[in-house]
Image 1 (cartoon, helix red, strand yellow):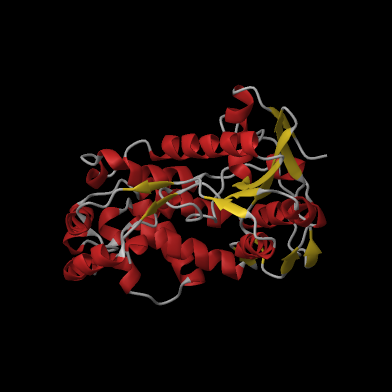
Image 2 (cartoon, rainbow, N blue to C red):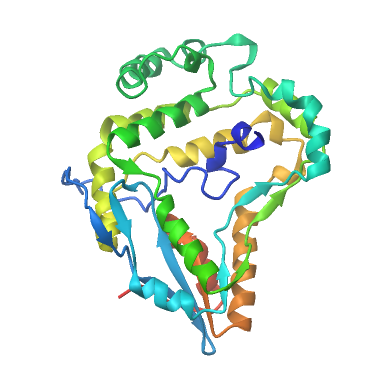
Length: 336
């Protein structure tokens, strides 16, 4: 249930906002060509990035979402190299761990958890959103969600997540979890060592955290507006990107920019009132990056061949994960 409280999963958890992955911006004159028929059948996705030093290699596969619902992913290259690797680096992220006895201690606070998705003081979306933004919400809600009076009392960040998920489903797109499941299956089949690369967020006073969150104001109107903008203008381009990933066409993906609601929604949670007095919730993105880079360096030093998965956006960003390794003297080669 705690994960439902923080699905600024776009902020704290690894695959939380898998829908929204920010690619590098494109030139303003780069117009997407609608591609309404999604690819079906078996597709390989992009090739592998190669990080190397002193004869040791870390292979990195770039995951992406959304993807076509009917696509079956299979890459012979990934299967072969992963099976021959000595270590697999799990995707980076952050988690909130609640052990069994601490979970029992949390039970009395569950009544406080109920309603955590709702706006404080019984406010509705109409009350907390600018009038023009709320007017744009109504037709999209009718199109993708239908009658749902309850959602009108949710915080904008949660309502936006529900709307975006429904919009993607109607567009024939999925979150692409099948790719992760297949990779996990190969890892288990070959009994490859798995190394976690994320960080754990402290949860010393869960009941107080929940109460503070419920009372906390979130500056999430911009997150909400950016989500509406994507659904209003970006559906065709999402299909193009999904098809491009399936075909391994990275150039096509990089040419298409879009409204980046992930950053706005993440910032709404990172800068919320309930995080300000909690040092363990500060600099989360930077700590996740540092943790992954540290795990990658250890794997490169210890193994002839290691394997990792990263979101494609984290690979392509100029200040992303592979750029950090390159700055440390590692050779980074793009897929052929």
